[in-house]
Length: 72
Picture 1 (cartoon, rainbow, N blue to C red):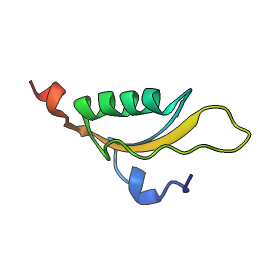
Picture 2: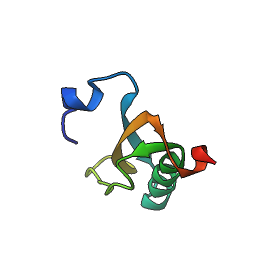
Picture 3: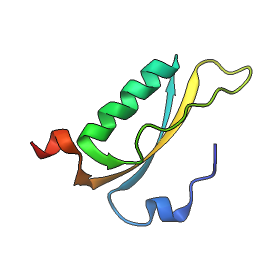
Picture 4: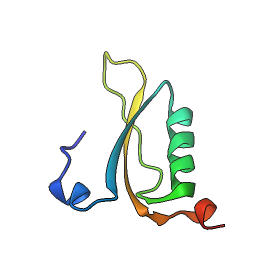
């Protein structure tokens, strides 16, 4: 995965979340859930590392901005 850029965490409320899951469907479900609560980078592509179990994905979020589920 790319290095975390200072811009990604330059202010309070900005976060970078690294997700590791057993399979792609689980990782996508987690990203979709986060997207409902906060403004996120959306459902990102998952990656597999040879010799490492599971899949990985990275999501960028701004917890100061609410997603659709948190707004209702």
